[in-house]
Image 1 (cartoon, rainbow, N blue to C red):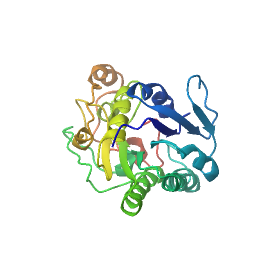
Image 2: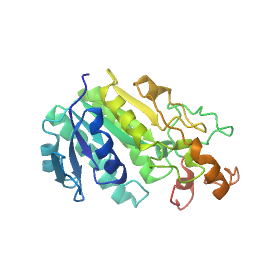
Image 3: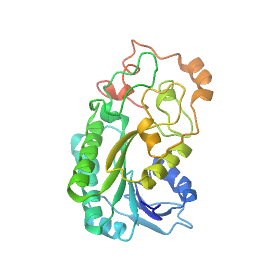
Image 4: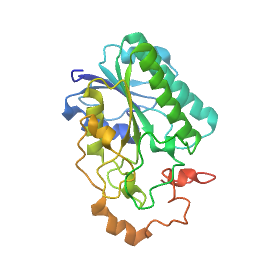
Length: 272
């Protein structure tokens, strides 16, 4: 697949979307923006569409003429099932239907480590958890990400739409907790990973983990690297400060024993 030039970015007003609006264009992309909220600071950005994912007419207009879609939109924390259903499950379905109707053949779907949140973390921090581990969602939010992965698989087999589903860890300018040292994805590495997912050939439906090359990494990044992803950042420079402030990971703390962290508590707790 040749590098797509025009990419629809859903969730463009969110935290991750805002970061990618700045970091994706240098990789050669012209962005079309979509969000339910008004998108600020759009100088130099060609399109900014304000609509809900349930607005199928607006979605059809948004996908017209794009080369690919980066689907970040949706609720990113736990919420009542009815809200998750509308935003994350039905909303993702609407995106895939719009792509199918418009003939868009590549989607990058923002999945999450919370699709496998109840997977125990490696006790030795070995970074050995494979992407093939059984899904164990930790919340309705995590459940919706598993649905998105399955929907992507269906649309590849049924309609030939290729998707890379990225189980994103925590993408912030810097890690803010000891747990995040193992799952941190720097914004610059996130843009590198999205670029690899948009341009790698013959992905069919591929699921990968999304994080930087962290010294304390919990999962296997080989699938992402096979796409051409070459992470350049590591959370380790932040480790001493965070451990001094918060202490090391505690094997008796339920927030530290599983990939999903505080999402695995009842009720789920944040920040994560």
